[in-house]
Each structure stands twice: as structure tokens, then as C-alpha cells.
Amino acid sequence: MSGLSGLSGISGALHVPRQHRIWIFCAAAIVVVNGFFPALWILLTSLKTEAELVSKPITWWPVNPTLANYVRAFDDQPLLKYLGNSAIVAIGATVLSLLVSALAAYAIARLNLKHRQLVLTCIVASSMFPLVTLLVPIFETMRTLGLLNTYTALILPYTVLNLPVCTLVLVGFFQSIPKDLENAAMIDGCTRIGALWRVVVPLAAPGVFTAGILAFVNAWDEFLLALSLNAGAGMRTVPVGITLYQGEFAFPWPIISAALIVAIVPVAVLIAVFQERVVGGLTQGGLKG
Image 1: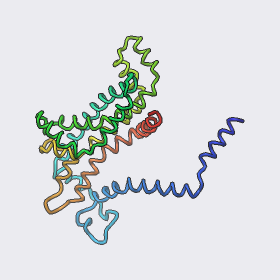
Image 2: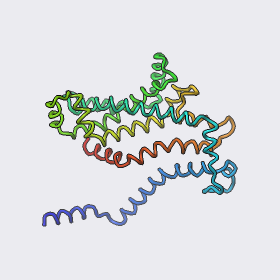
Image 3: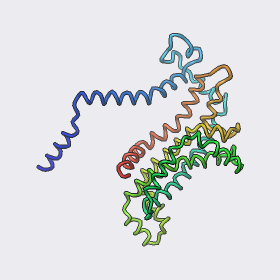
Image 4: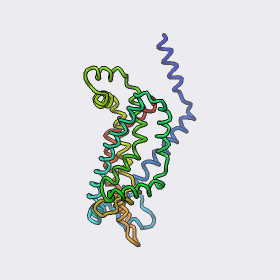
């Protein structure tokens, strides 16, 4: 009987008046349209010819869909090279961000730090500085070290920029793992670092996936640092390379749209494959943190 009363209480709590459901549906529809319409419009534009794009009245759907814009996107600029550069930078920054943030998160979650809350506050505060205010110091540092126009010039700053969010995500997961598991591993001969990589990190896999994907997407999409630090023709990333499609007096929007779709595909595939882990990681991290 107590179980039935509990279920009835839950169902009563979950019951939402019809008027409220309509507002919730409208809000959800606005979010979906706001998120998907720009991508859909870019996709449709990439399938149009330039003549059709400027014709009046505006055609929402391509009259004669064509893939010629995708061919020109690879022919007019070395888009494949840009994709490779972005992949190297994003993967390198993601791996390094996870390594450093895992150590930092473990120290905050497990070690008896006197001012742990202050440390977390400083981590959050460090992520609030606008990137444009950090551009000149980062540029001067990389120039002094002789790292301009190298992959390292972007991997190191991206790692630093990703550390706050990755650390905060992992702290919540590490705190939820029982210390007895680490103690058992250390009794069996593991060092504390060994227990971290062999016990804690595997058990916190959803959080690791979430932090990794957030770091990868941030590094893949970043434009300002990529434009300033790697201006060399052979070191440009996708966001910087796409800006080169525009001419002095013309903007070939169909070709630019095709390049944008190509750039979106890796991130979209990554999120689609690990969607459940990302959503679960964000939800669990919010509850546990």
C-alpha cells in the first residue's frame, strides 16, 4: 500500500496543467527552432547556385540541388588541410586538458585542502575573463617562445582555457566515487596516481567523456586565437580557413555554406555517437557536484 501511495504521489507531482504544458511546448519549440534552423538554412544554401541564392522572390528549398559547391569548397581552398590542422589541435588540446584537469580535480576532491572552496572559486573566476583580454599576453608569450605558426601555439592556450570547465566537471564525479576503492587498490600495490588512472578515471567515464567533448568542441570552433597565432598558410584551422573564401567584393555564400557544413560534420558525428554519455555526464555531474 505504501508503494502504491508513493507512486500516486509521484504521478500527482508530475501532473502538469494543460495550460502550463502548452507554454512548455512553445518554449521547447523555440529552443529547437533556434538551434536547428541556422544549420538547416546553411545546408539548403550549400545546395543552391549563386544565381538562385540572389533571385527574387527567395526560394526556401533548392530548385535544382547541386553538390558543385562542395567540390569547389575543396578546390578553391585547401579545406582538407584545414580540417587536418583543426583535428590535430583539437585532439591534442583535449588529451592534454583531460590529463591536467584529472590531476587537479583529484587533488580538489581527495586531498585535505584547507581552502578547497577558494580554489574552486578561483577556477570558476578564471573562466570568466573575455578571450580578447588574454589575446595580447598569449601572443607575446608564444612569440617569445618561438611557437607562432605551430600546433603547440594553439594546443597550450586551448588547454588552459579548457581546464576550468573540465576540472569542475570531473570534481563532481571524483567526489561521488567511494574512497574505499582507491584504498583497496593502494593496498594491492598501486600508488595514489596509479589508483587515479586505474580506478577513479574508469569509474568516472561519463564525466571524462563529457569534459573531453566540451574541450574538443571549444578547440575546434575557436577563431580568435587561431587567427592571431597561426596566420601561416599551412597552419590555418577550419574557422580561419573558411574566412578566406570571401573575396574583396564578393561573398560566395553557397561555397562558404558548403565549407561550414563540412566543418560541422565531425562535431555533429562526435556528439551523436556520445550523446547519451554527454547528457548523462552533464546531468550526473550537476547532481553530484
